[in-house]
Length: 282
Image (cartoon, rainbow, N blue to C red; front, side, top):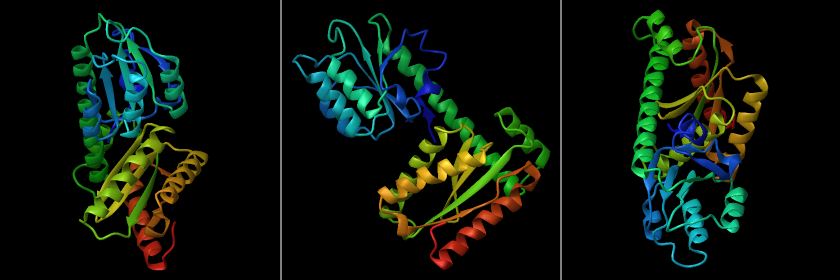
């Protein structure tokens, strides 16, 4: 689970005088953590989906910032923030052009803004978002597995922006890899990351979790055309990752009301098992 760049900088960009100068189309990129990075070699230790800050201490020759930016993109960084000052006085045009080309948001902040304040604020927002999403996952599981009082669970979801008559669709994905192996973990992580990235670019009410060696995607308040778009884009990723023959998907109906979602979830799960038996993709 992660937070989008757009949501992360919302309401704080003005406080820290952050200005988006390139990569606007990538503001729906997901962010899992924030780092201050100055050394080119350190980028090799990033895991992807970070927002990276730098003042450019090592920016001592022409082309350094472009090379640094390309390194960040190659390791999967979601956004880049440059603290303008004595080390990096301006952003070269080629850096702006590159970020626009690959849709990596590039921000600038003035020298008087303390990076430690920004990163601490961002990390706090990321952790808070993770806690909220973990709570939503638990609540949805409680509803579909009939744990605790249903009305209490519904009220909890309403606090997080869901409605008691929200339309919900479950997508159950099985991966033809041996559970627990490194290959399984790599493939499943890729599926989860890409599914979340696609979903958050359409609507924010999306949750995923694993159940009985299957990945469960929960789409809330999606219209039929948005479901088609999500499915089409996810299929594109699955084909690009050469997983088409290794994935089976069961899809539930898109129905309103929390009281019916236990049966709706079960339908998606059983349909996925049927897809596995028939060796069908979806």
